[in-house]
Image 1: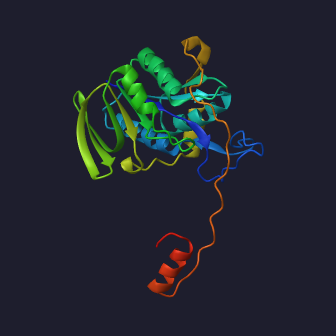
Image 2: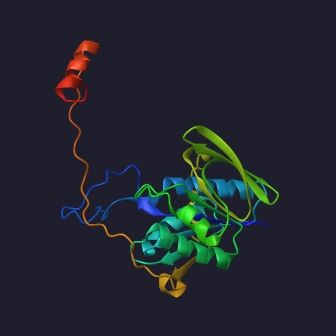
Length: 250
């Protein structure tokens, strides 16, 4: 039976208004509610559904970050994951480093399928899944909105600019979940209590022999400029005049 590994990233909750630090060194996170990346919740839900249909034997949630990330892994366990692994580090992790870490865990766990969110809402990079597939030398199906397992392959419906695309890839493979793949289940209190007893292993980042040297350096962070107040026009002629005044049309 298959083992599914799911990436789970700790991010600022999507309901929180993100604020930039006064010195412009980054985003303020002290005292801010943190949650599982929404796309990763979708990835986990799909893995759980595969297991419930008898198409997988075990679902393992993996996160990379500080001790506090155990909270998000406990949420994953409450949703239904069988086990969780935290690769502990206080360093900022770029997509390539995350892919290298996931590859080390994939090989250790002998995973058959890796499902990740198509992107994280903090950096919107959408790079970790494809990078992992390249390092693992396995197929990659991104932006998945429907997934079906058929023997040793997976049939995936992808959301692309022109509409929908259906592809089939051999397993093992990396799949990134899109928004319309499913709706994650609601976590109930009894499940939260049960999650406290499920295994959560902590692996020190240094033990993996992977460098944390960053390829990119954030020089400065600033909030977007406030939008100007809109105006109401009576007809098309007044709209064109307003656009001409702004230099948007000639």
